[in-house]
Length: 77
Image 1 (tube, rainbow, N blue to C red):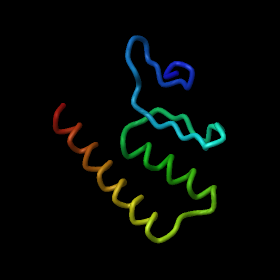
Image 2 (cartoon, one colour):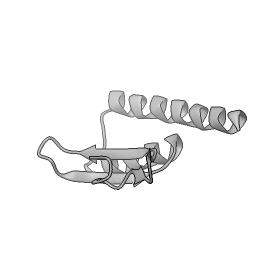
Image 3 (tube, one colour):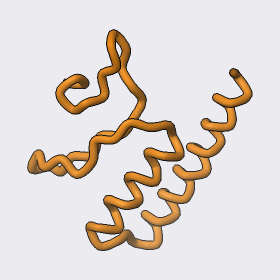
Image 4 (cartoon, one colour):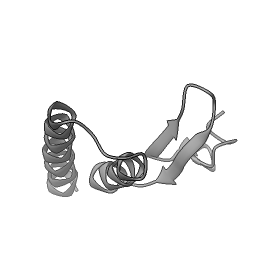
């Protein structure tokens, strides 16, 4: 399945995001790190008409975690 959605890189799985509806419609299949994938999901949500205030808070929390994760990766290198 990973190869079919384009997130296979040779023998390894490439980091990225895959967004699909309950009906099986693919909304996003993009490679990228944590911060980039949060941006992809935010774009999908915006196209779908936005989110409630509570859901917006969850998205902002995810963005903070993703940014922190990217910083951890840079420090580890």
